[in-house]
Length: 268
Image 1 (cartoon, rainbow, N blue to C red):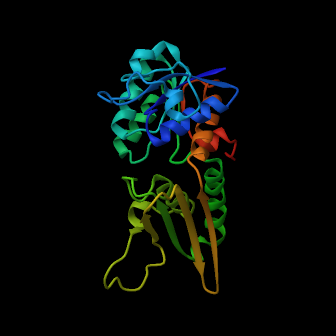
Image 2: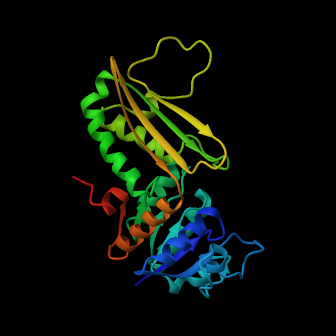
Image 3: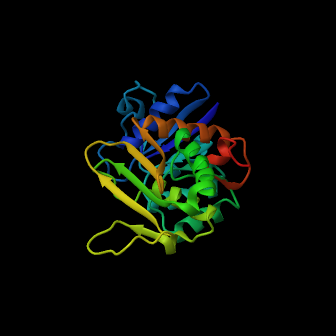
């Protein structure tokens, strides 16, 4: 039985994570946090998530339950995630990170943490999305040099970063496969007189609205044909279930920085 801590357990994603931990017979929720000053501190995490009382009260600091969990699942904010990493380094616990919008400096901090504890960091925990990542490598090898490449993503109105971490990772996979630098070839939206399209660019388009959970589509547009590789997520449960799968896998690992490709055995 893997003992799980969920950071931000009172939020939309946090509740989905609590549900996923509850539903998995190999995991148990032992710690749940919310932001300091929240009116929900002390409330039962299971009741908030709609799965019934779990006798796990929300606390305002991960340090309050440091000895009570094996793996932390964190989908909070970049700043909170870095604080939690430092706490888990001190306690020796593993961390599954689904937080998006991290800076390069913060990502480097995760690399450092991997020298001490086991960490799974992925821009998307969905099993289907990670299969898409693998398919993109093949599509880029076969069609990338002869196609215009565009990535379109859509999320709910509350998402604060754009493009999504998943869309950016899709671009990184394609660019790396083609020997390009995404920071040099990415085009984020178009407006006005842009001139003819540079064939070596990778375009990104972002949609925000309503309650869209997550949609991602990569298009390889050649003369006479277009290949699209995409996925639509209907529920946050897809991300939560993937994160719990990652936590169980990570519990048996030593130090190191991993991603969902490692968890799912998709590495060549």
